[in-house]
Length: 94
Image (cartoon, rainbow, N blue to C red):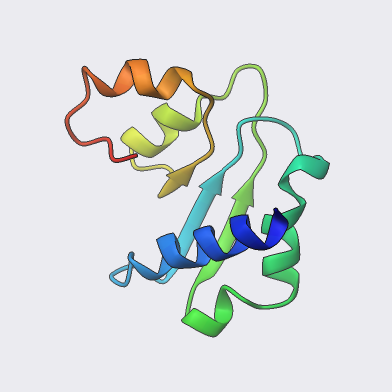
């Protein structure tokens, strides 16, 4: 499962070729469920594609969706509520 998430993130990040610095906004505090992202960074998978990835901690007052829509992050991890939100936001890509 972790390998799938790493592959998914590397693929998504490779689509953002115009930006070298990438911010990934987590939906919650640093914890085990995000281990795949940290392992990929530690093993330099992102830098192999020319990406400098910063992983930002989330929390109860942080909205990954808002962080992405306001340009503070390029990618965000969000829950299923993002599907409902997408209906009103044209620039959101799932």
